[in-house]
Image (tube, rainbow, N blue to C red; front, side, top):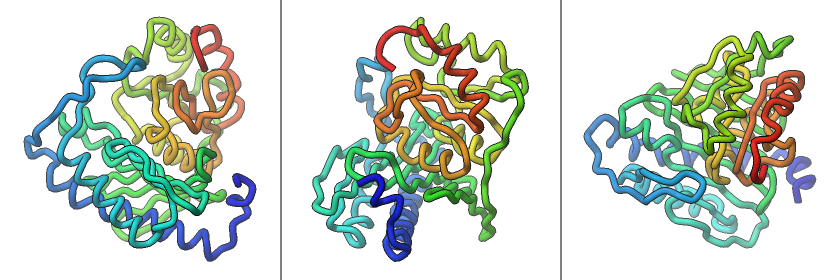
Length: 279
């Protein structure tokens, strides 16, 4: 199914793009109405991969409901996997992977680096097309089938990752300074100390910056499928590489490294080796 989707006819690709943008459009009013407004927060209690405070807001739930409604109207035959409502089966062999607010902690804190994530994939497969939408700043990053673009204030420009010659020239981004386990944090530190610049707290926006060519690396651990599907499609469409820390497939989450070019990616994998546990 992966190969079939990569060779999809133009009409199907257009239909999927239209549906993806409709889902992002549907989420925006729900998130914006609650951003920097003192929205109530519930604690889901974390996961084995990332224990502790795991927030969810009314904005998360309302945005996902709106996204699902938009997709049901345009693509009722497709499956949907969402962070808040789980999985709804389909019959087409295609699956939408949704995260209504990636970066809920940032959303609660009022930082404008959260985003709405929309991706379409063959069921269980690699993402074909993805959107990282930041409605507060008016930026929509979208990519698939070898093309990536940023649309802002009615203007669209194409995106390409940048190619740096060495890790010492690279900017690396991540969300949490501790990254994950103690071993994972140590592995990240080995990379960070060799990079020119390290920045934290970016959530999905970090991947958009790699696609833009203003940053070179994102390294994270403990991700779910809905965290990575859309960013992965975007970065790869812009010319980058997204894998697990061991170089394997990343579309199901876990430990992920996104790089703007092959040389940096390969250098990073060597430094991340030996973190222990599954890749």
